Image (cartoon, rainbow, N blue to C red; front, side, top):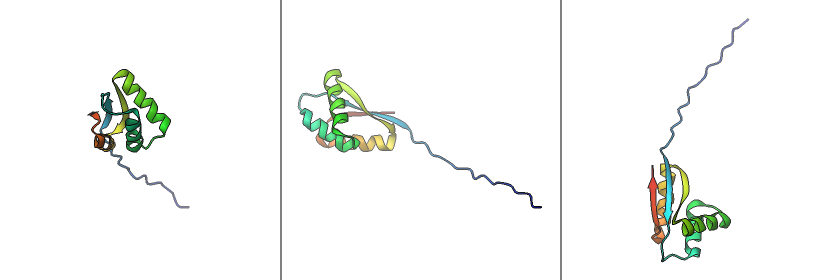
Amino acid sequence: MAIGFEVQEEKKTEVGLPAKVVVYNDDWHTFEEVILQLMKALKCDVATAEALTWEIHTKGKAVVFEGDLEEALYVQNILEEIDLSVEVFI
């Protein structure tokens, strides 16, 4: 009778740095411009983009993305295409 054994492979999971993207309110972008750019950057639906835009407007800023630093920088770049005031925090 053969003795069976299981070999477990060690898997390395690389975790990126966590980051947040904050968008600040301004006086020159319309609600529609911000909503459309958020939808483009976050690949979210209109309701989510509208809620974030309202938070930006009423509170002066909003965290629009939380996740990996590489993804956060991607979101930042898209939002800055129309000169939105954006900051990434690590």
